[in-house]
Length: 515
Image (cartoon, rainbow, N blue to C red; front, side):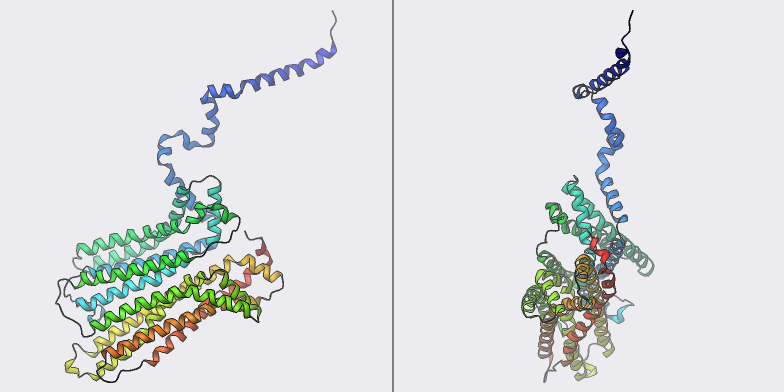
């Protein structure tokens, strides 16, 4: 009986092939299709959420919340700066709105220990409410600039999620959660402090005041979340544009949203005045008619100045780009021509404060001249009463200017950080850093100069009109109001100069790898 060695040698291999073939046939897709339990084991092992129906039902919001937290925690320091500054802006907005709501809940005459008697009468109390509502305008501009910190990096991350399979609704929820949580932090802190003050320093607060606390405390985070979702509408619609670095469209929508917010606040002011004046003595103040005219002119002139700043920046960029004789002027002019509405977003609140401040100086000079010309026995109150009101108004304007300058500084820093790859490329090509620094300052100085000139002229006109309406004799010309635009212009240049230390780090060769 003979044995073939070849057969003995190939036997184990044949057995292995047969076993492998049988194993392969055992995992036939057709067989797997007939046995869905076998095919879903790996899926359940990789995705444990699919094994729990309750988790599948309640998972989307929790998953989006975890993604928003992971994206924020895994980002660089700019994201944490954005969260902190957004929380600060939300805290300011909540504080001003809560104060206005608390004052609006009062009807008739009260004895308030704060404000040197300005909060006792409905007429003067309504003026304080309008001032608090107007302070929300620079806060809105500040929040808009804070939302743009790290905007390019954040947009590309969410666009990558969109390309990876995330639905548009999921991307919107993640964006809303990122912004809403930051606003919630600031709102909770301010609301908690307001509740403590109301419980300790206010006997029997009315129900309307508590309703204002609830509406304001919840409304600020909700509005912040909605603004965050609206800001990424283009990322959701066309994520490839962010990944491929397609040039974005004009930012005119941001200016329209800001104008809509200003108009909403302007419409809310008469409602607050009507609610406050209800139930009080119906008296017509001596300066009531001219004050209403001044308020209307402020809204019109401020809106015109904000609306013209984008067109002014575009025209300035085109003219200087053709006639520039220095590299810094050429770089700044091309930047303005490429994105003129960036200046409108950054300078809108500054222009409104300039118009109001210039008009205030003229109104103050005319009012004090009229009061000093009036006999003391014919005044409705002491001279210190009127001076205190004017001083508090000046303090409110200075606070608004500080907030607007903070927004300008944040916007300049973010613009510099978003362009650091291009700035590093220019430095590598031989452009001196001093030239880039001058170009950065010119980007603020060139469009802001004509806009402040227009705003100062409008505010000066308002002051002169008020002086002519209230003066019994020769009207006083408020020449001191001409100094306001110059002071604001210098302050804006100083605020823009705060970004120059960041320029040194932004032009390093390592920034060429920035994506």
